[in-house]
Image 1 (tube, rainbow, N blue to C red):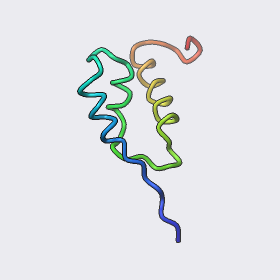
Image 2: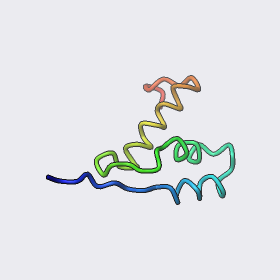
Image 3: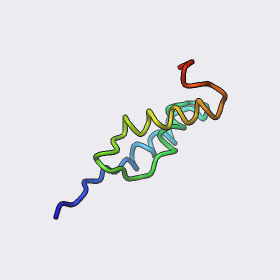
Image 4: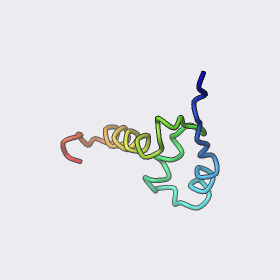
Length: 65
């Protein structure tokens, strides 16, 4: 029986909240994430998916990115 490895990004999110400007897209992307991610759902993949979700919300189509 294997246990899924979790990656805690809480400190990274605290840094983003405290140090990045309120209008920062990176700040928004990081703060949207859960505090813990599975190793399979790594941060780069998660941020990539969140980036596309934000772009869709503000009116960009995937083909324009």
